Image (tube, rainbow, N blue to C red; front, top):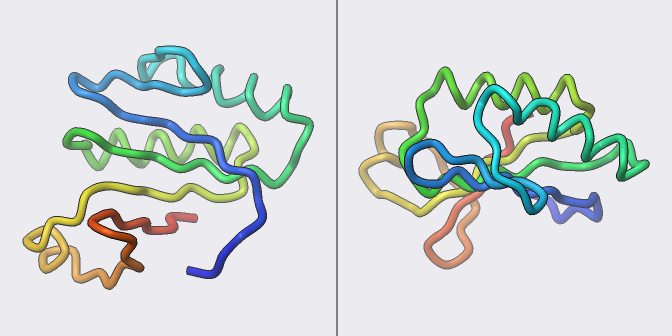
Length: 107
């Protein structure tokens, strides 16, 4: 991945699906409004959303979060998590590594 000067907003997915974003706690039903408020208040059109998954993440829920982010106006979604050799082999990815973390650009 090339280095980017775009601003980054971070969504952290904790245990039990808790969503931490912009200093607040959300659930899947309310996060889209949080994304829209964030983009509207930032006054920018080039913000990247970084999703940090600290627990397992259902693929359907992940795709839904990506759709919410895209609709709100984020220009890209990136996924960050801990490197797991088994997962890497299953997903057949070659992430850019920084310590034990990796980031995958999604859109």
